[in-house]
Image (tube, rainbow, N blue to C red; front, side):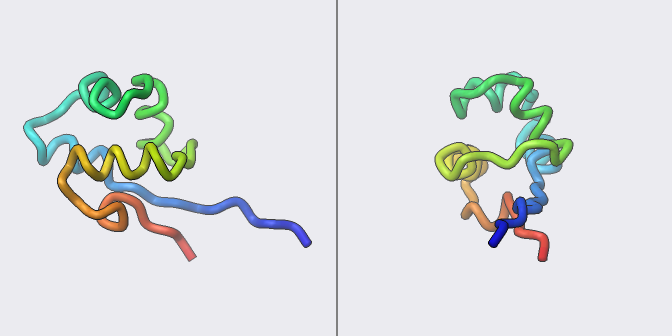
Length: 72
């Protein structure tokens, strides 16, 4: 039995702009990852760990499901 890779959509780019036009670098600094990771997330080319997803949601003051959505 194979496990399909999760397709996860996120709202990071929109949320950054809604939160004072936060830069990718500033978000990366606040969640302890690289700017490149934020770029990959925003382009849907990287699925974050649960810990990273939770840290990103915390920065925006939102539950994780308001930042990330599982595409069925």
